[in-house]
Image (cartoon, rainbow, N blue to C red; front, top):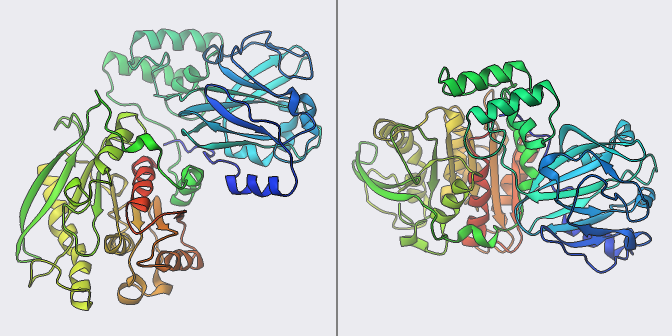
Length: 521
């Protein structure tokens, strides 16, 4: 995967509120269709800001100047835009913030004269190798990033240095870049090839087409990309190849940090009419580890076929639970099938198989009968049940992709403790590791605190989630977070304000975890 320079929200709502409390005044919020609650912190020039709907050539850039645009990318024509104030370039603080009304792609067109001393906030945006010109002979360079519905996007500053004209802000419904699909019609065919040939010989005028034409993701569409596209359409190859350096776990997690927020969007748990969702299969195997039959649920994605291979996510329940504990049969409020299905349907998550096992792995009794060391040991023994029996069964009976880059594990409470234990014990098998409200005991019963680190292999993603209102295990997850930090282990700490020891932490964790796994390579 080509690593994005960043997808981070530059400043949190808390920092915005802190700035307001420090004395900044804002005018009434402005509302558009895609961008709402636009608050301008530069009160002196706020009256010149507005939200417009007809970005095109001869568009007036600023509310306090008559400069206009010439040459607008075709996919941005008639887009919603924020007309800023040129004099806001002298303002030292963050200039404004707005809320994404739906999933959108946001572009910033900024004067290239400021880029010699690139503002820090723009380093969190992707560069688009395309420019726009203005009537006063200024070149505007394009930056972009995606924003989820309800996300706050803050518009930064160049520190009040006055080195350039101010920028403009453009929003369109969220774009989905698929290599080879230049016209974004969902198919890769001769129309895309013709478009690529024409654009390579002249000049790209569409940002989506230019990115989609970069087949090998080296940053520049060129003849090699055209050759791959031709061979793919003719059937000579069945997949594109890329020329990118493998991303490290630390790099990948840094690219994800800004996408982790406190709660899942309200529509994440909805089951939408006309949308296909995955189906459960209950499977039972005889376990030599447990000396009895053990059951687990397999969630197959919509349209599952043996003609395709799928990565696998293992999701582990908590103390007293079983293979049904995280399904509707155990807690219908979790809506995990819907959260996963919606993410796959919108293209935000990979097609995947999800396994919900019974993680109580005792060789002497069927189920947990108390909160004690004996039962803790049975849960800790799950690593053997999983690796020796469940994973080989999945490989033999389902069409799955193997390898750590295609295998993820996460768990809740005691399952979170076990997912961390398994992730640290076998990083060669699991490339993505998560834990929701992980239970105590990892660093006292299983792995010494100073040994909680990786040697030569580490996961692409290590996500630890905790709820501020977890009154069962209290500060245990933050203790793990502190240990990981002290040991220099790259990870993402996901602290859910208002989260509990249950769904209020599980749902946002699963929302972001499934969107982040199987994408680093």
